Amino acid sequence: MKKITFLFVFAFIGLSTLFAQTDGLSPTTIPEENIPIDPNVKVGTLENGLTYYIRNNGKPEDKVELRLVVNAGSIMETDRQLGLAHFMEHMNFNGTKNFEKNDLIDYLQSIGVKFGADLNAYTSFDETVYILPIPSDDPEKLEQGFQILEDWAHNTTLSEEAID
Image 1 (cartoon, rainbow, N blue to C red):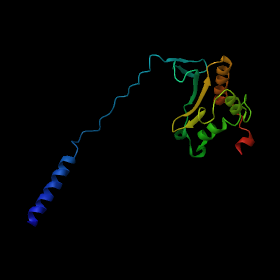
Image 2 (cartoon, helix red, strand yellow; image 1 turned 120 degrees about the horizontal axis):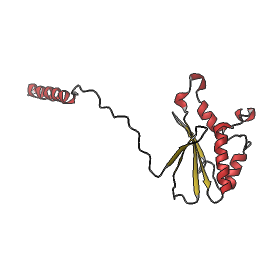
Image 3 (spheres, helix red, strand yellow; image 1 turned 180 degrees about the vertical axis):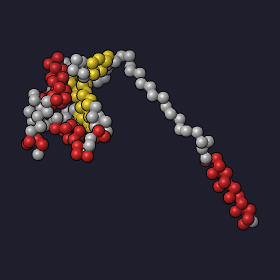
Image 4 (tube, rainbow, N blue to C red; image 1 turned 45 degrees about the horizontal axis):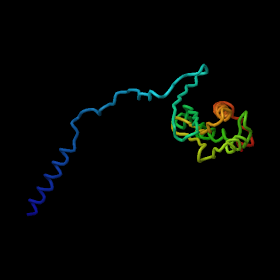
């Protein structure tokens, strides 16, 4: 009886191994294709090279969400630059050319934008993204929103006080 059990277990293991083997083919590759852009999205490039995407969205009502996507993240940093993209993300909230220290947060809260709940940013491997929802009831607020994006793009003050 022990021999039959041993042969059965041996046969089972042998057959399992046989069926588990691959057929020797190389892994399937997925062809590189661009994901099609929603036809409702308007895409353009400004003279300075900034690419923009505009899409109407009814929800949430009376809001415009502006995003600045910087194609730089942690994976692009050298050993000497580790953490720099994330550091810069935070520094953009500590003062810019047009919004000193906490003026940016104070202004945004005055128009109903909550820091953290609405206003946010993140750094990933290959991008740093700033998310800025603005009420759409006043063109001046939208203009200020674009000013904030411009400041985040290249007008961070980087004061010694904020760095420390």
